[in-house]
Image (cartoon, rainbow, N blue to C red; front, side, top):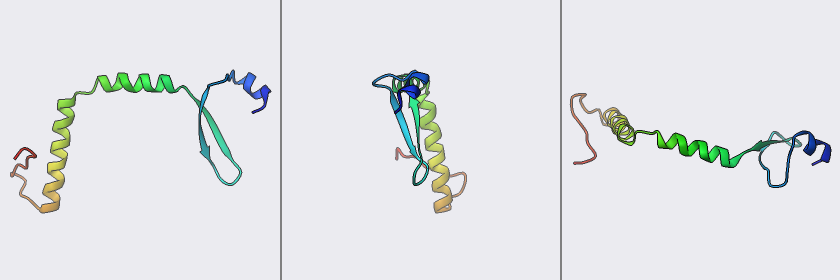
Length: 81
């Protein structure tokens, strides 16, 4: 990478990039801050209500099972029994 580009973009050794292929002769590099992305993901994960998520997944799977097996709407399907 040309030094003028590195200076203009304030790049330093160890910076991380995502490379995307846009055809035969085009590659796009995007600088990323992997540490910041991971820290953000961890913070977002901490706010997830796992009990609510489990209930939503169970209800969605019950709806899919009802559709697939044509079970009457009033019948409750449960993974516990």
